[in-house]
Length: 145
Image (cartoon, rainbow, N blue to C red; front, top):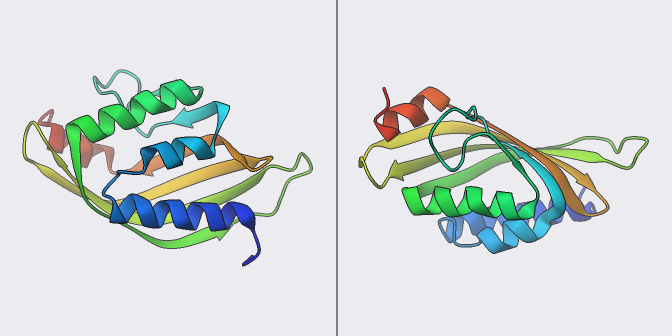
C-alpha cells in the first residue's frame, strides 16, 4: 500500500497535526468532500462544539474551531494505519490507530486517550469520518464528571 495516494495524504496530514499541535486544520478540511459526514464519539446532547454529527465541510470546520478554541493539544501520535480494500463503489476505508492528549483550556484538566479515526475515501476525498476515544475522560476534563 506504499503507493496508495489516500494513505500518503493521511500520513502527512497526521504528522503535521502532531507537529503543529492542530495548526493544520485547513489541511485536514481540504481532504474532506464538501458533503462529508463527520461523526463525533460524543453524542449530540453533550454541550460542546465537537459533539454530534457534522454534515458538510463548513460544519466540520466548526468542529475544528471549537476543538482548538477549547482544547490545547499536548501530543498526537499515530501508531499505525489499517488500509481496507476498495469497495465495489470505489470507497476505501483507512483507519488511523493513535494515542493523543489534550488539556481543556477552561478547566486545566487533561485527557490522555487512545484514538481511532475511520476515514472513508471516495474519489480522493474523505466522504465519511468516524472517531472513537475515551468520552468519559473527555467529560472529566471538561469538568462534567
